[in-house]
Length: 162
Image (cartoon, rainbow, N blue to C red):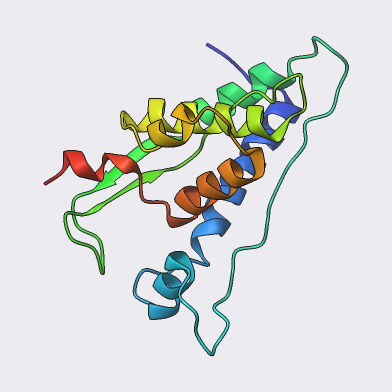
């Protein structure tokens, strides 16, 4: 049995709040949500979810990473498939959260690679195979591609659900 510290409980509450607040900006019954997700130009500006982040700060070995993983493990599903979902055919698959290590090189191409590999691992898909196979990879272009996929919250595993 694990009894979390106050800091661990606060970390879980913060992660939970960030996930829940993100959904308030993506009402599937609002056409503006779909225009925003699909990148369509429109006269009216659809409300966008604010960029939320949190930081766990402490000395090395104090349990920041372990507390984060324990908090994420409390979320019932990392990948969730809705059998039916408004405005979609064959339902919708969502990635609720993703965790990657930032490469020690500090290069955008390495961060994008980590994000793409983890996305494909979680979804069981091959959405980023083509991008990863390129001889010359542009880190910013790869990050933009990953961001667009993550923004749509539709995972590449939709092909598994005909």
